[in-house]
Image (tube, rainbow, N blue to C red; front, side, top):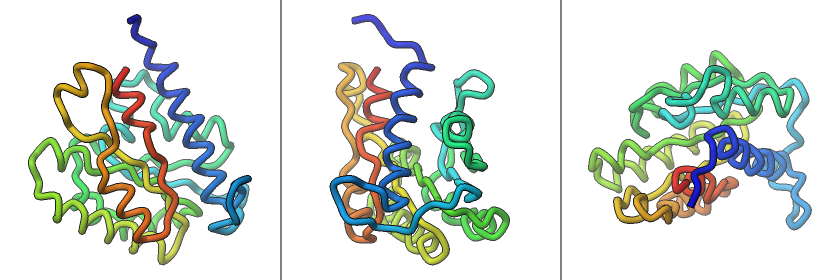
Length: 185
């Protein structure tokens, strides 16, 4: 099968993120609004690891930069290569204070899985990240895939179930299957 270019894969992810923004803003067609309407001047804070940072992407094509271009919202890229959920948690209070975002897009935890961080520590950090952010802004949790070598080799990555658990427990929208789809291709 022929591999799709990075730009195309990121475009597919962005389409899904635009849907997640709609859900977070309370504009879902299939459900009652879960949040308040996102103001046009609201800042989007993208907190995560290398996927958010845009490692390996051409200049100007990280998902936060493309999201800003597509939505018109000021978008802050708070992605750090190699970061973990606990590392993001340590950075979050300062980031919330400096950016006062209308929406936080949280995509972190893949490095935890790759480094063998105990799942309970990752789950606890994800829960605390969502709870801390939700006290001052709307949150969308972006699932990351399970690090299964065979699934990666066969292009069949799936989301780690901890994201659905955390999103359900916290009552925040989950953007599922985005990174799994992109990274499988």
